[in-house]
Length: 390
Image 1 (cartoon, one colour):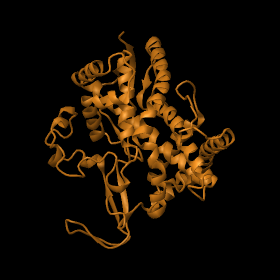
Image 2: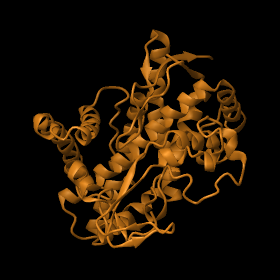
Image 3: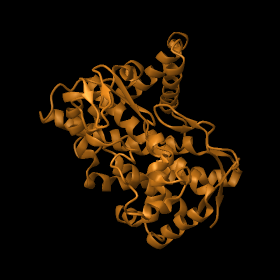
């Protein structure tokens, strides 16, 4: 993860994802990757992240409407899909200044986005689907491209002065000659990669966190009590989230057991390398590593490695190795949005508990089945009923 001169993103990833991700940051190496990472850094600095809380609250209002209706009707909700709609709404605002409001009405962009991710997973297992499903693939790729190209055109028409979203910042930098070579494809790739970074990982983190809390009533009660003590009836702010320490432990434990971002990752070796354990890897060889597996190794986490225990994070010496806990990767390619993901998750959870909503997990006795794909998900979903306690 540290040695970018020796290991790079393999070309097989571009073969699978290049049509959707383009030449964005997730598939890039070398100077192209470094250039794009530096472009994205300002959106994730502390002042920018503090401003994002207004966006979280706006999306949360619509989320509360959905929960209110579900509580009244007895409707079953699937948490992964619910929180994908929430994070799509927040990241569409942060990414290109457009409130999609998918919580209030279906959005074809979101459906096509989901279809493409499922199909990428399927094509990894059944390559012939590239032929049998090509027509559907072209349709959904077209929906995504048309949506993003339309947003770029709208932003150019409306102007970007005074706007803080990622797309507006790129257009402003282009106008001021701070960056060059800004084509429509470049902008499309940037927006698409930004959306991929923000929507699914945080959504799955939220869903998995609630799953584990609903399996652990004592932990859930501690979370609710901490939110009541720290936030009370105040509007949730960045400062509040910093004080929600037990909730941070809960999120870390959920990320340990259910790391959503690339649960199995790989690199291609750019030159002959000898690893610290004396293993030799030839140029062109592939190296795979799995945060999902590392996070459950008993040699690091103890005999209870498979159990959900947020209290383990109270031990300041819990991390015995720098790569023992890597839900956001490590090294130069560590996720820029790591702090943002924690803050958005804390803000959302605090608002839900503060508003008196609770979930009841259905089929609680069934094990959580994992779907190992580009994003780790619960294969059969996380289905709940909604209750309003005040």
